[in-house]
Image 1 (tube, chains in turn red, orange):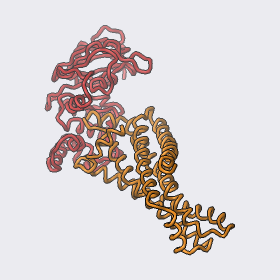
Image 2 (cartoon, each protein chain N blue to C red):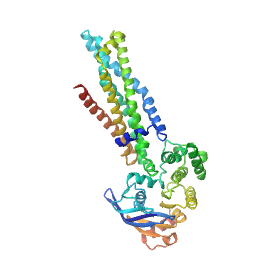
Image 3 (cartoon, chains in turn cyan, blue):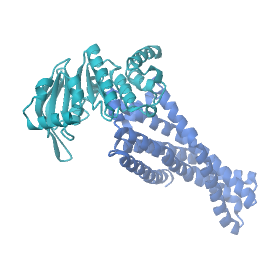
Image 4 (tube, each protein chain N blue to C red):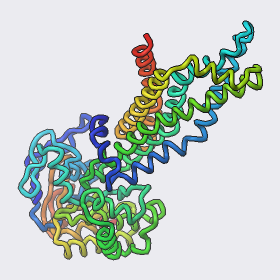
Length: 243
Length: 235
């Protein structure tokens, strides 16, 4: 469960979030859409406290994270997986070592156990053959799949996706969409997807939230979202259909 | 950040960190050896030549052993080593961590619940702090040998006379103070480089900026702290 209570945030003298309130229940798959600068990524960063709110509170699974200690937030974060926009893979580590990193640094598992877990996850994202390659040798889609494998390696309860299909061609984007759906079905995760891609949002999520100028202007299921009367939502939906 | 890194020094050879620690020990010690060797040798040669030519006017060129040994062991050894390690290793650390910061790799590590101070900072500062005195000792030896070479070939100073003179005018305190400086310079280079790396923003230009800043700040601190240590021990 993710709960935002009246969150305000200003960055560089610009109001990014203005009283954001929402509740995401366990197991829900929510897409957050909006124009550039609407506050989507800032919202996501609040969920893992990479950014702290100026006012308001944030709860994850019933615990406030905005006033947690460093050690507690580190433990909390280990139950959350994040797929970053640029995948954020460690460039000097191979695909295998990138995925094994959280297990090596956070658990006392033996190398054999780590190999079993990582190999299984690599097969799941269809990258076992590429396990010895380095991130710079991979395509954008492959990097996203490695990022997804790493984000889920510690069996998180919540997974956050920051623009999972940005920079990818339509075919690869739909491949990533299918992988996310498969992941949600198999692991029953609470998922939050930040995206510009309405096709992706409609196919993956159970609800779509639209942010505009730091406020939520629509939060409904995909059918109602596309029928929304809000002019900004209509404009956003129409612009995507035109494409 | 330095205090946290110092706290994590006890994990330097733990199962989770030993690979990175050994890697950075290797990078600091081996990768910089060639440039350090050249600089050390020529520093000693230049010192010997400059002081030797002056002393030769008074027929005292036999004293170049002491001039070279004292200035190298007390000041030039740790100072030159600090500058070279700042330029070669410190700048690389600032650029690497800076790139990781702007490309969200540091955020990714934090979200994975990995302590970045332990994973990224500790092995680098540990390696620099541990290795700096050893490299400085190596620099001292090569510089003194360089001085001996110039003394023998250019100023007709016998090797035995050169080394005897060097030993007569230096004591263990000079060596200890020089190595203490090197150890502190290692801490400075590691801390400044890592700190600057984490403060990078605005993409590639931001990485360039923090790299330049890391080098300049390290240089200045090496000069200032070097002076303070000399004053503390010799005044």
